[in-house]
Image (cartoon, rainbow, N blue to C red):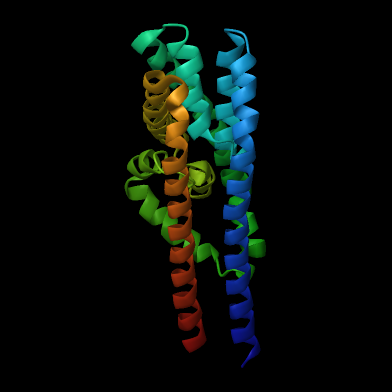
Length: 238
């Protein structure tokens, strides 16, 4: 086995290990975040709890992995239902969550825009990622960035990283902000309404939501494994 083939295999292993670690950390922090979210919201005064939702949802989209699937139903229950705010309250809280998500994702957008390509140039070879791959992805993203960003905000796990990828791929800032807010608003409103309707029964949603998130994470890892295997074979042949 030649040195180039060894380096390719080592890069493949590094990429799989990094992806697996990221998914594991996401679920561990998310599980601990259930406690960190519920009790502060439960005991916060009216007005402070709205600011708390904004802060939590900002962190959730900035890569801290706080569980929006807990923040939003609890908000729908404690802020909207218990204070009898009705549909206007649900819409208002969804706007707060959407704005917070846009801010948090915007921080990752700036990180991807300012530091993404230099990181790829310096460390990409260790993960089988080259700047030409970014160029190709940017060309694809340029065709319909708004639609892809909107959809990404509706997918568990994936939604957290959309801002960094958009910044890395140089998506126009205005289009990024609009698509991110709209997708986040839809996501937030859906979970807020569930909490508003179900009240303290919102916890019934936790298991199916967690199963969905784990399934999507497993599919992402499986897709990455297949992509890596194909890339290793292609580089080995060349």
